[in-house]
Every structure is written in C-alpha cells, then in structure tokens.
Length: 118
Image (cartoon, rainbow, N blue to C red; front, side, top):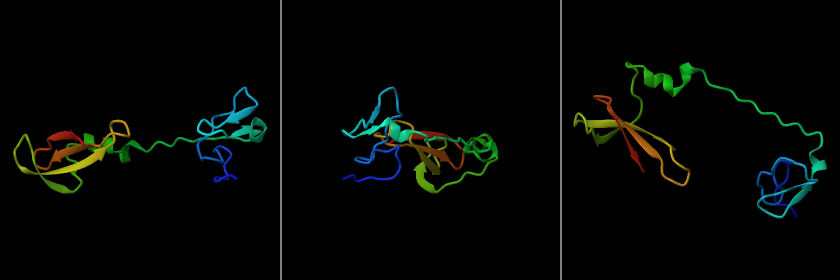
C-alpha cells in the first residue's frame, strides 16, 4: 500500500523525486525499490517558467546607492572601525546547507561592513 499518492513525478512509496524516463522500459526510484513502467508517463508534458525580478526591486540596487537608508534591527555590537555601538545585521546561507549561516553586520554610523560565520 502506497503512503504517497498523486503526482507521477514522485515515488508513491517514499515521496522521492523520480528520475526522468530514459532508454529503459521502467523508471526506478533511487531511494527505494519502487519501479513504474515508462508507459505511465506517456502524453505527460512538463513545463517550467523562470521569472526574474526587476533590478529596481532587488537588494543589489539598494546596496549600490550611497544614500540608501539602512534597514534592520539595531543590535548592541561595537564597530571595529569607528568603535561606536550600533550595527544592523542580515543573514545569508553562503556555505553548504549543513553549515551555519553567514551573518553580515553594517555599522549605522560609518557603514563599515563585517561578516561572521556562525
């Protein structure tokens, strides 16, 4: 009895994404022992769409403007350049998913930026 049902692009036994049909007459799940005949995919059409955000709305455009307002919560962290308290921060996953995020700090006084790998 299958635990998962619905989309034929996913294994009904374990929920893993099934590989695209190839030259073989069956598609085998890479995670479990489930097999499905290629004929099950007959007539199926797969479409994908990529939509890019306008440059004006991206965070890159805000970083390039000298007079842009700094946004974010102000934390009690001393700037290593001007030695004043008050920095804002944001995080990004720069390394692999099993490692911590990278925290970017920006001084609200001199706009000096530093990063910390957590």
